[in-house]
Length: 138
Image 1 (cartoon, rainbow, N blue to C red):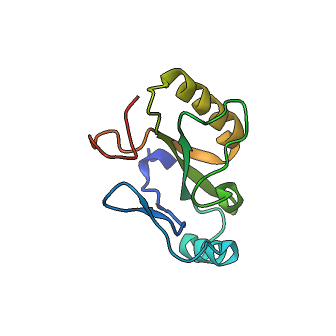
Image 2: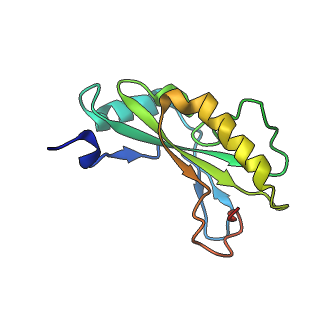
C-alpha cells in the first residue's frame, strides 16, 4: 500500500541570497515576492500538489528567545506557504559561545511560530561540514 510518505516530494529555494565559498553571502537583485509567487505557482502546477519552499532562519548569540523570528531568506517565507505549499525550514546554528540551551529554546519558538505552515525542519545547517565559517554543530 502506497502512502504520501512513499512519494517523491519536490521543492525549491526561491530566494536571491546564497552562500559563497568563503562563508559569506552572495546577493543579487532584491527578491520580488510577486514574481516568486508566480514562479512557485508554475513549478508546483495544480494547486494542492505537495511542494516545499526552503527558507532559512538563523540563531546566534544575539537572538532573543520568545520573540518572532523572521526568515532571513527569503524574507517573510510563510507568505509562500499557500496552494498546498509548505515550508522546508532550515534553523541555522551560528552560536560562537556554544549556546545549545538557547538554540533549543529558539527551535521551540520556530515550531510555535511556523509549525502550521512547515513540513520539514532542518536542525542546524550542514553540520557535517567541519570548519565552515558560518556553521557549527551544537
